[in-house]
Length: 403
Ligand SMILES: Cc1ncc(COP(=O)(O)O)c(C=O)c1O
Image (tube, rainbow, N blue to C red; front, top):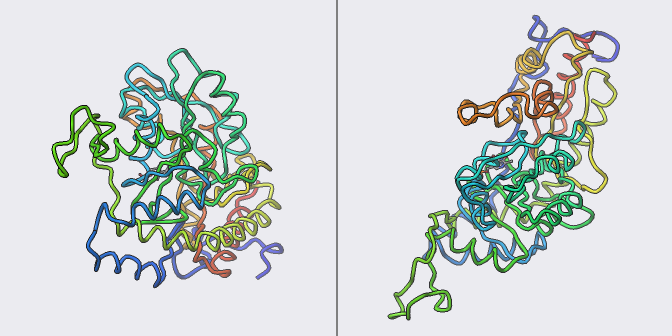
């Protein structure tokens, strides 16, 4: 069928679905080397706090160019530890974007601070440095800038703004592994960068997270917060060590440790990062090529400074050119067996945030974006056929409902 010559009938209107098998928006890729790496740990002496933790931290420093890495149980724990290391506390404000997973703002709440939402750029969907500048107050302590979809935030502008106002720049890099900003790996630039190794991310450990930093001061604090605030370093103790068993709790930390099984899996996955990155870039290029031809659709703008390994592919609808809304488009794709998602519901829409006093209307560009987006399938193991099926389904629906 030549989809450019005739209007094919969507499955939602009685036509034949493009695929007979469902495809989902994300999926991990696990090979035998990954399984072997985990099995080796399970046969070893240490299941947690063993040698794999330090090995992974060294490997993350090599891969990203950061001086220090502290791995932890997940990306949310990483954000919490980063906020604590930045000194965020009651009465402070932390600026972030609403187009993110809730953890990017929750980390401020965990510290007793108030998240303040800055609007996004209408074309890149990343936090807008100009909006951040408008939201800075005497109470602002840190900025949590999310590299949404894996595209780097505008680090030069945000760094300058943070330096000028004495703020800590925390990059929420849950999506960013594999991306470079002006030729340098994200993770080696901001005061602290957090990572997530959740299964839909480019590199997974099942669960897992990390904080990357070039600051020894932050590094030492992060080590403490990961493990209950406990130290075995005599120089950090108030008392004299009473023996080899001795340790002191000198701060209030958490159990945010990562297991050695997770660390081994993440290391094995990192070996595949160049391959993951290449394939994700190929799929994004093919989607962009196909969708940028249609006036009913918009593709995410990429800033030239970011060499992006995309974690998510966001399709944006042009409501003026379509006779259906996002929900109908989303459901029509599901009827074609293309199962998508939406990233993200603006954080302050959630009932918990509404009860804290946040109201709709704070970030108009983010709110408009939310109405118009769908996350399409994007993951390493997608075949060429999978990619073409997704494209065919999207074009079929966009053309059928064109206005
Ligand atoms: C932007 C962003 N920040 C933070 C997180 C939290 O990471 P985790 O799920 O590893 O706790 C996620 C994960 O979904 C995320 O997408």
